[in-house]
Length: 495
Image (cartoon, rainbow, N blue to C red):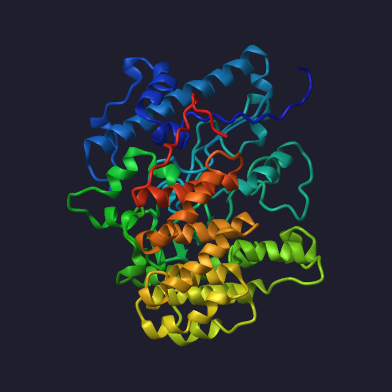
């Protein structure tokens, strides 16, 4: 009281756990109980995105999400009432925002507008109206990133923003009213689910580059799969539209390109259609912008995790310092991204040439590119066998996860995965575990090892054990083995 403050309140009411993962009974007890019958949402009236099948269960779960929003809105109102009661309403600038799209399928974790475009409301009391970019109630279409929040708060306080601080102020004196020209997005591993995709978005166009196109958007994910709505969408038996197939397909396009003004749901991929001259010019520009932004930001995502750790250990410094050249050595990040760019675009020969590269991360992208381009090609697979012994864990595990599907190389591939499952570094063990999980029945001989991983980690605390238990447990369940059900409700006792 009586001193400046900066406070952040994180309201979890609309979190994925509440909106789709908890059983309905837990939702009713902990969220819906706050609402009157008139505040509950009618499933028949909820807006249905075109990428969802129109079923009773999907509508029920969408209504549940909107119920969560109503409860959350009430909580925000309570925080504002507290400010008013404390006499601070006219002294406080309030930001209201979400951290990403909703926890519903095809929203959170994806790079489409449904995943990255979020609400942002800023409330200025009268005494600070001179710092606002427009009159109360105005809607501004300027592009903003979360990286802009730090500089913006400093600018509102009249504190000089450090030159090396990422982001730009969008509020306060001297702030840019036009906003930024482009927003950069990234998707990498989440829990046990490996991925690599990047996006750029300007005021109209959205461009996605998928570097793991051999994997679909709806990969197996234990936490997500606890939601009945995901199962409903994934296993829908009716005829699907193209928009509905996009999310559930086993693979995905190398590029996705959307005109957000005319396609706000991002369901018409212009990268796969005949384009107008305007669209073609925009696509070329967005490709260039993606490369420019990832270079400017020193995006480290082209490095597999074990290679990141190798650099950190070798140089004895945080990876950011290594990439900035503050240590003796650093990886050639541009060259590694160049290798990643060959996925889905390079020839078999160009990708195969990467296999002999001295840089492990470039070899990794050679494997990914070849898997996407020539999964069933025996001659190509034959060139990979020696890399089951690659010094890089990421390379040999990706090779093993591919060759394990084929009888002639299965035994050697599973031997590699069995060894890396026992790695001291959890990120190596997790990559191996995920490879075994995705092999499914082709890795049935590894049931004993996966049972051991599950037993070791199921009740251990920490994220690493959680992810290993997720992956090993999913493998066991798929093969009909008994596992303990996951419970993330408030009553559950998690390690």
